[in-house]
Length: 232
Image (cartoon, rainbow, N blue to C red):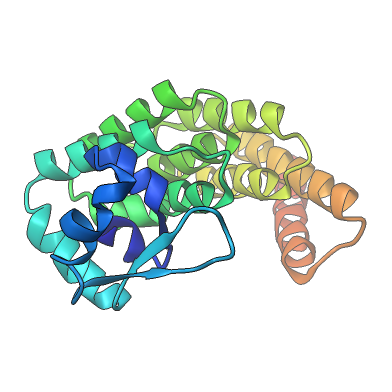
């Protein structure tokens, strides 16, 4: 409960039951009474009861105290991923918060541990566009940038959800990030054009241009102009 609630998401009783093999009849004696000062149930007008900690900061402290080794944290994440049912909107929210690139970067000090969790998640949810996107964004933050793999993951996510502008935004930003890391002027120009193409697709889908797409497009087109002037 605390591992998920530190991100502000409540946890379904059904998920707790599956992870810890606790029958619903035993919840009062085995779960709620021993932890009544830490967690409490909430009614979300669903058939399933939701549980939440007294405060996200309490959840954060307990999560760090109990999962005090990389091995324990990996095992806990594996159990959650294995038992979660993302057809429930509550579980889907938990899944997304748990595996968000930013949250994974904080939860795991070792990239190898985080990637082990991502690989396990993909083996359980192989066609999840959000998961593919977040793994790509996590890899993009690593010093040893794995550009071909990052693009491959994002293109796979795009194929699953072609009209998801968040994925198109990620593709644009990854290409934009790569520009300054590249020495070849030819490749730089290629990356700029790719970034612009995904911004164009975002605008086409949204039917309008926001401040981000407008400023990014201007910045990138100025770079194209500079390459063309150099070529002359």
